[in-house]
Length: 353
Image (cartoon, rainbow, N blue to C red):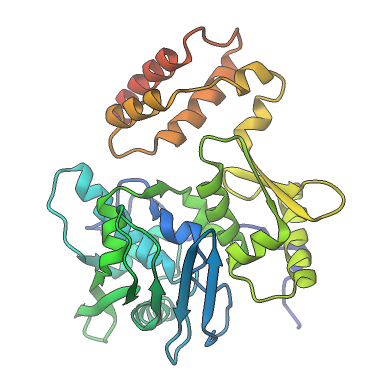
């Protein structure tokens, strides 16, 4: 098409569409973005950019999940931005000691800005459609949240309302009522911090790969998964051959630009039958394997959570390991004590900022 930018020259990340510090943002989320672990682990959202009206069934390690679309199709991975924004608000409320409610009121403009969406008429129309797909998508599952396992049938949100509009009909404020299933997960802090550049990833598959890497790497420096299992976890309906091609494109792009947040992605070897996700700070530790292998006890991780309430302890751990690599010297003789000391300083610096 005349005037179209060649795909090979397009930047792998979407541009930052909004400058920070907009004085007109009254309800802006200040805390880090949080994603619930259950939807990071299991393929709930469609990766299609077209209406996806195919029911799906997922079974893995004893977990069963059925996702049923409405006439508008399944909720997409981009629709999930709404839930991430709402969950992040709830976690912020927990950290500030405010009462929780399944119904969250959101300012539409703030949501669009923070999730790097367009704020023109099309942006608001897409947001309205996202509410509709989230309300219409039905789940049947026995996956636990908040330690509770019940076979449940529910929508991703119980209700969505536009509570205030401008004179020309543009959405100003909306309320969404989260499902009990999702709310239990948030109340139990079954959430993980995600990188802001998640919202700049162009491809739905890249977003899904980041979620899986964030969920499965945890304290590990890497996560190795077979291509077949990865396809299942992504919820891809492609053939295995086509899925391999799609993954190969992501791997090639990440090799050239390192655009995937937090994690590098590559083939395990030339057979292309398994994919390796590796924390990017591991590469900086590569010249010092002893520091990369410093082990923290479960007790130290739990104490760190108490010292850094509201923050993702694994993000702080990443910063600590990178700091060790940059500062040089021998690994600490008492890793737990060294890490907890770092956590205290890290939190103090964040509060002072």
